[in-house]
Length: 382
Image (cartoon, rainbow, N blue to C red; front, side, top):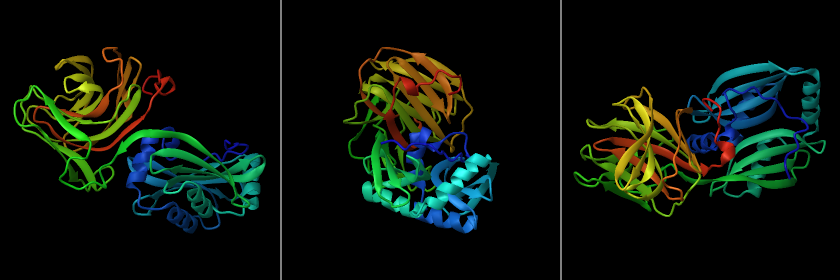
């Protein structure tokens, strides 16, 4: 059963898009957040005073996790407050006026609800054991007050739990999709290559690159990252692939930081990998100030498209590659910079990470998400 939005609370968003529209931001925010939903509700209640809490949602603001709390304030105003999801500190606050009808319906639903947001979050976890709540919102179902509680399960499924806001009883649980894979390296021992991750190279010039989990206190989601160290020369491509993965249409995300490199810097994503000599790759290179997508066939690389991008070593960048059928789109920090079609590799293959020559880099928060025609936008910059 879907949550019937007879009354949708129009929250004031502190970011340009909904977190739910971007599963990757949800995964990354949950990996970095330290403040629980119950703590966020408590902090919001202290800050809101007499205002009445409508919803909380975990989001990313300037690449940092925040809880956004929405209040009904006064007679006809909604206020959104950002709570740092790591420290619990109050941040940005914004308000908007509601229409009299909107405000009246919000007041009516709040008055009828006997279960508060913290109780709804707790109840949601009873129905999705071992999960993490990232959104609790009050609305109505069949004319009665109800909560929607969004939960990420341990196996990275997104679940929508609907609860009666008067009794706390379960209305229904819906599966809202799943991440095909998520790797943040935080629970893995430092100094080791993750199990199932296999380093490879083609055109070898020196020893195989060392891909190891490393400490990363300033990473997008601390404490760990995956770092590669190599002394290879310009002809060598350094890869690490995840054995057992096989994706055709896929939406890949990763955070990249170029550390060092004289011949080359940076790195990127690889997909539809048959072996170390056959795959697609998109990579960001601070030395060349560009972002490119290639195909590698029988060990030989052919550029498909290039875009100028200013980047620097030591900074983190968000890379994304989406491939559906023969269409490839590649992004840096949310901006679509590359779009091509190619049908060299028609079947699914492994995914992984890539650098070239002596490029030593760090990676964090790799995600493989479902991709289909609806998710590949044709709008400029989408």
